[in-house]
Each structure stands twice: as C-alpha cells, then as structure tokens.
Length: 138
Image (cartoon, rainbow, N blue to C red; front, top):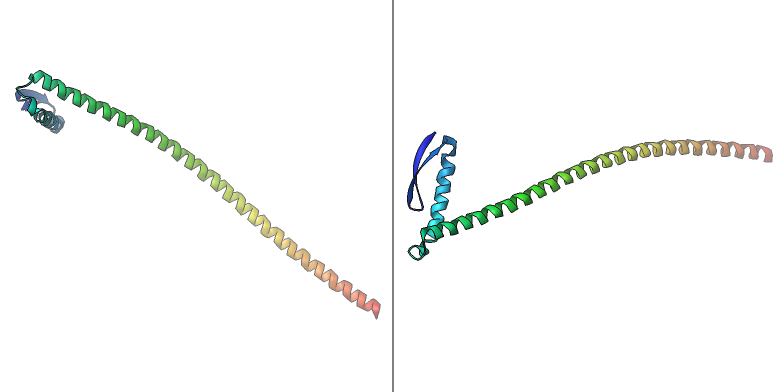
C-alpha cells in the first residue's frame, strides 16, 4: 500500500491507500475541504470541532438522501422487472390470439370455399330442374 499526504480541514494527514483508491480519496478530501471552506464564515466564531460536526451532519444528511434515492431506484427496478414480465405475458397471449385468429381465418376460408362449392351445386341443380321443367312443359 502506498501513502499520500493530504490536507483535511487545514490538518496534514498521512493516509495509506491502494492504488485503485487514490482518486476516490483525493475526491473525498476535496469534498471535505470544500465543505470546510463553505463554513469559513464561522472560523474564529466557533470551534473547529463544531464546524467539523456541521460538515459531518451535512454529509450524513447527503448519505441519507442517497440511501432514499437508492431505495427508490430499487423499487423502480423491481417495478420495471414486473412490467417486463407482464409485457412478456401479454406478448405470449398476443401470439396465442394471433395463432387462434390465423386458425379461425383458415377455417373461414375453408367454409367459404365449401359454401361456394355448395352454391355451385345448388346452381347446377336449379339449372337441371329448370331443364326438367322446360322439358315437362314442352
């Protein structure tokens, strides 16, 4: 592990870190120092411990906000998964309905052909009856 010297709240600190953590540590130090500067109007009026406490409270509040947001995201992700399952179910239902419709359409076409054939037979029979009638009349 490597060491780094940083200034936090105007105090020099020597921190040990793993190389992959270096940027996170530097960013955290920057955030803390920015918060320290944000309360610079209180320097000399209250103790550094009170300023550090205010910063800690503010950071804790931010952490709580992040947790609330994280929980909302988890709920939304769960809702999203549920919606995906519902969509998949509806898609399967839709596929089944489409299969049924195609089957019914095919059956309708078959029935229409049968009806057409029946009409042709009836027409032929009527023609034959007309011929028979005409023959009888003659």
